[in-house]
Image (cartoon, rainbow, N blue to C red):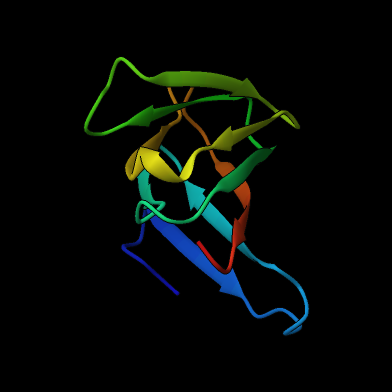
Length: 100
């Protein structure tokens, strides 16, 4: 879908009968994403050691996941960020519902 050189977001097409999209986020430091207030996400850290997933509107709402762990991002979270405090490359695979 796009990127700025340090980040990239890809979304893959799926079969019409599948209720979700698959997205991948590539980043070194941090990257933003958005549930748009409608779409629940399941985020898995596929590459990297550990990341923080934090709400932009309510930074006190966050969680940490390690490699191959997953977290459910509620639709109501809205704009949020993935932070790679340990540095290096990270990739998050997201299953995002198509209908919210």
